Amino acid sequence: MALQDLTPQLRTRLSRMERAVGWFVILAMGLLIFGFVYYVYHTAERKGWFVLKAPYFTYTSEATGLKVGDPVTLMGFDAGEITAIVPMPAEQFVYNVYIEFELKWPNFEYMWTEGSRAKVATADLLGKRVLQVSKGTGGYPTYVFHPLREMSIAEAQSLPADTSWVMAEEIQSATGTNLLAKPKDTLTNLTAIAATGCTNILVMNSAERRKFMTGMWNDKNGCYDPYTKGSKYWLISDQSAAVTERLEMLVAEVEKALPNILSLTNELSRVLANGVNLTSNLNAVSLSARPAVSNLALATAHLDQPGALGEWLLPTNLNRQLEVTLGSANTTIGTANATLANANTNLTVLVENLNRSLDNLANLTSDLNGQVQANTNILSAISRAVVDTDDLVQGLKRHWLLRSAFRTKSTNAPPAGPSPPLRSPKER
Image (tube, rainbow, N blue to C red; front, side, top):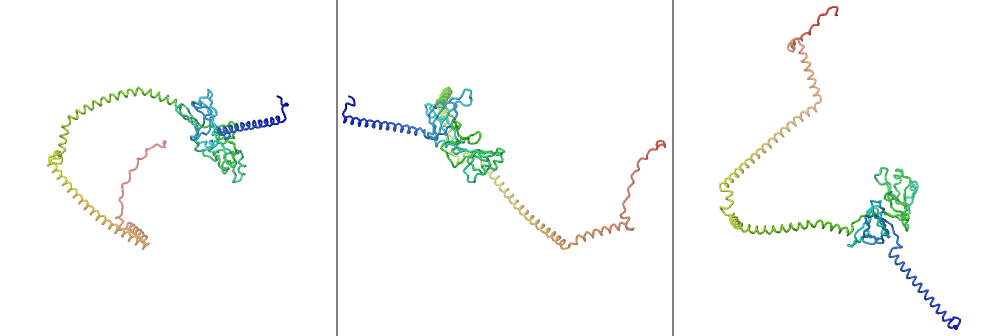
């Protein structure tokens, strides 16, 4: 039946029904779209699609037990995921497998240039392995969020003292022995930096933090390079062998040790058999030694009685002679002690007499010194007396009466030398 054949009342009801169905369809579509958007948002939030991620990479010898999408753990927590696993070219002989992964915020803030490592560790006994990263212990953050800028030394010196610009690179001294500046240091050592011949420095504004990475640390150049899409920081890896490889090595070691174990069991059986024979022989020896042990027990029981073993070893006459000898030695020691005491007394008296003699000599010299100090002309008078005495003796030597007493004996004259040979007038 056509719509024109309906009455106006039916057409009015039908239009109302159509509007209700339309609203229901619109509401259902809205709910469907809302549920789909909520699901996508929840999934994105769960997988960290809206969270900032920092890219890293490392190298391993093999990728056994790893696959793309596996979580990357930090201190036992999921910190990111593996994004790529690619084998290295055939001509590369140092590294075998390239592994790229991302760390979510704020997990990548634990990554520093010192102490941070990537390690491929065993996850279970079925060969599954997991990529782990370790927390940094020092150095500099791998990524920074402060704006970077390169400026000259003169421009840096013109900045105010309370500026928020800090260093973003390492600067060595002219000799290369120490650091003049390092990242996050204030701009206070610009004169020493200029003395090294450096004209421009790389700085960053510590007061401003961007939402995305602005710089990545360059270990080779010792500075923060501007971050670009595709930049990734290299974490050195520490790899452990897979469980299957460890089991294979363990089985190989067991196979090598089995012959030795079998020979060891044979040796143990022989040792046990020898032990049984030894115990049987020891039983027979103990039975035969029982009389000797009984006699020894009887002998030792009478050691504290007269006629015992002590008197056998030291007879009565030897014991008496030993007592006499010890008594004589005691007397000799007493005499020597008395002699030493007398010698000590005499030595004390001698020292006292010597001390008195030295005191007298000191008094004599002090008196003589006092006389000399009191009479300052005594030395000149003695000298004059000596001179006058010498003149007197010289005058006595020249007096006619005493001259012969001081006359010296004449000695024979030395023989004359040989006369020259005679020469003719012609030769002269």
